Length: 67
Image (tube, rainbow, N blue to C red; front, side):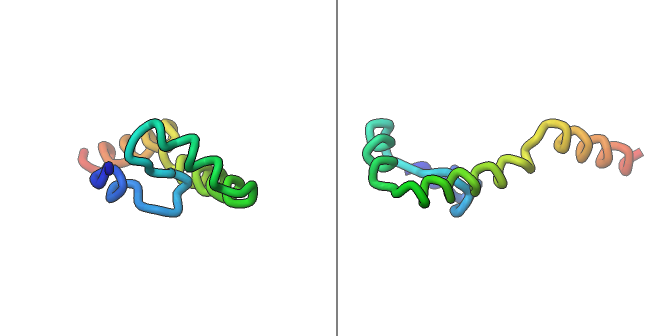
């Protein structure tokens, strides 16, 4: 499994981890509609902090503080 990726991103973030590509469809088909909806909401919340505009603003602030 992708242990490094799992450590980096954690759990409860909408990412579903599988051992091989063939395991994606079987995993998704076992989830109920409400669980899929919850995972989707978790993923949307998780990726918001990786918006390029936010990343650039943070980087610019860091550079400004260094000068």
